[in-house]
Length: 380
Image 1 (cartoon, rainbow, N blue to C red):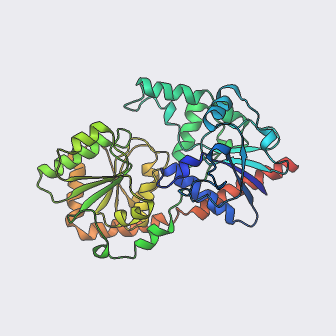
Image 2 (cartoon, one colour):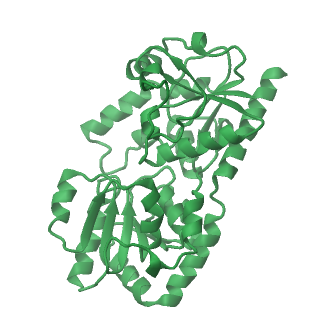
Image 3 (tube, rainbow, N blue to C red):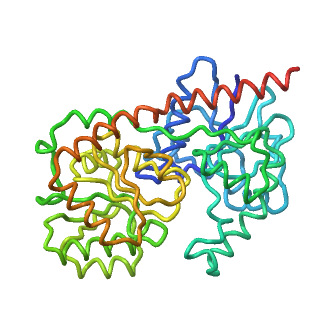
């Protein structure tokens, strides 16, 4: 199978978000498949002086093809006007174009498959759904997503939750949506074998770890409320936060001695930080999947997650699902986890068992199965 994989290179630079990790992990494994001949496809403006992608992307050494137009302007044309048509830059022997990121690709000469990680833009009941910024976000997505659902041979997504929302909010045919999921890097499974007391820690006291930064979507208010309650109770448990923070939340965090903001951390440091934690505290209001929850379970760290969106689906019975606004109840769960070693051990064992289902190889197998079904249909 000849596969052309469209990417936004900047989203694959390390350190990157969950969508970037999904793209990197999927595309690197597709490149290893003997039954797939893959080339990346992106705007030529991303090439460096050595005619390669930036060294901060793991995809740098993969073969590629480019198109000559600026990425942002070109993609706006695709999404608003359906132009320029890209067939001219697609090799004639291409069996399928695949995009692991949300976009619309106007191509006629071969089938197209796109991954839509979530459709937060169309949710109307979130705390920020009626803000002007979110309404603008919704309008921008509305200019292209219906065309994508109409023209793509298949749309991939990462959870049953996201699939159900695509069907319910956008009227998509459920038979055209394939859930491929997400995987966990082997590093998280491997570090689960290391004793915590041998790892370098961000603070001496027991800590809750959160990755994604203090932001509204990531439950910044709930996280700070839990930290404040733990401080009020005299608990020694700290909150360690990795990722970009909103200015308002960062200012509020400075008033709490038990909150440690790390900012962006290198990808190689995340497994260690996750493994060293008393628990993951992930109170996000909306996730298409919620990769940190799966990574925590793989690393042998209990996961305390919000009951919103896809997170209960990801952790199942292995995690502790909470209402983000119930601050005292969350603090009580933290206290119990801190002092009840048998409870903690049960969550660790259940989490490691559940995490076994989240592997990138399984995701790629689901993708390739769908690719093969499409190409078989094209030849019959």
